[in-house]
Image 1 (cartoon, rainbow, N blue to C red):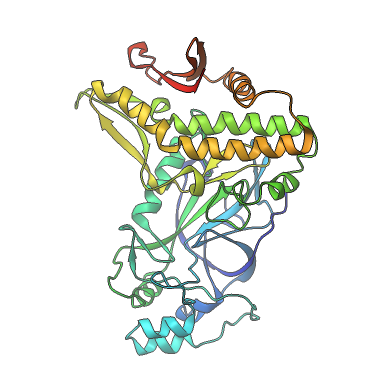
Image 2: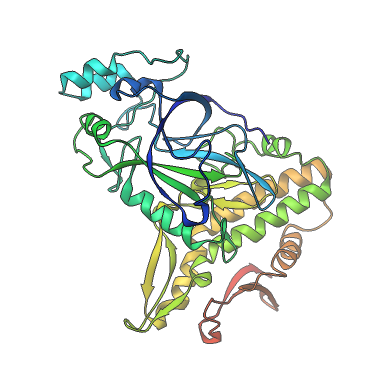
Amino acid sequence: MRLSGVPVTLEAYPAQTLTNQHFREIGHFPFARFYLPPTLSGLWDETPERAYTFLEDDNRGAVSPDPVVTLDGMGFHLSVKGVGSTVDPFSSRPLDRSYASELTEDKDVRDRLGRPSPLPPAEETERIITGERWLRGSPYGGQGLEHAQIALNVSERADLTSLNGFLIAPVVQVAFLPEALSDRLRTLHWYRKFRGPIVQELRLVPSNVRIYFHAKNTVGNNVRHVFDTFGLDTNAKALAFELRFLQSSLAMLTLFARTLRFDTSKQRYYGLDFHDVWLDKDAVLAPDGAVYFVDLEGIEEEGVDREKVGEKLEDQVFRSLYEFVFAYEQIEQERTRRFGGTHTRKGHFETMLTEALREDPFLRVREGPEGVGLLIRNALAEESLNILFPLTDR
């Protein structure tokens, strides 16, 4: 499937990389490269191999319009995280080479910013990778090794794209920007200088359609476009899409249970949890409706005592429950608008939940006199740690 969006030109250079153990055999385009916007090509003395046309994705990312590899029968696109931003983080002023020149006290860097790219110019918005320390582990517009390593670690725990049913957009490689280039970028800062290695994440994504934020077309602001893009032109296709959305989203809401382990040395339970990442902006929809989590840098293990396991399971569901129901409502409303519906809102939701979780080893629907609940089991198969989370009330 060819994606649509705002074009972004990136120039490719050979790079030193860390490679996901599941993808060690990959050596062709477009991997083992780092990518610079033409705005910054003057900061590096090597000639780019060639320029590629990507599409704008998120504040500091870009995605290839066409798939680059097939995984599990689905085309995946290259997503590069850390290719520069277009706007000042502290105002709405465009972040272009003229503004960047004001940020540095290094005359050589200012002169280099004025150099034209050796490749034909692209008429588009300029973008800048800065050296401003941002979100603790990353420079503004770029990516830091600390965060990229976390994302790579999560990717290596998965079976390509699945971690016990939790779907991810895997990091294939972490590409290092050369130290001389990174040093020049670090001079471009407002207040605090990022001093760690500057890298880029080379990821595989099934699309650039997000739930609500960080994309031009999302489920939240243009669900009609989503249906048209993914070819949901019959009720059967729309129902299958909705079913896959429910399956994959609920797997995300129960990640801690799916990765639960017990550390005998510490006598604590550990599982993966989310930190500063969210369903509505950090996940993308595949053409079949499955939700793949993209920004893996915010997923790390968290430990709790035994008596807190149930509370953690409940908290993780609550954390993204609103975003989950919001997105489901947009999809179901559009399906009904196009093809009609005969069920009540809750009745249809409960029916779809039961079907969606029929083969999930960690989740089951439990119906009672007060409503429908979600039985959450765990990777340790300890029944005493299971909880029943209420989803609908009678």
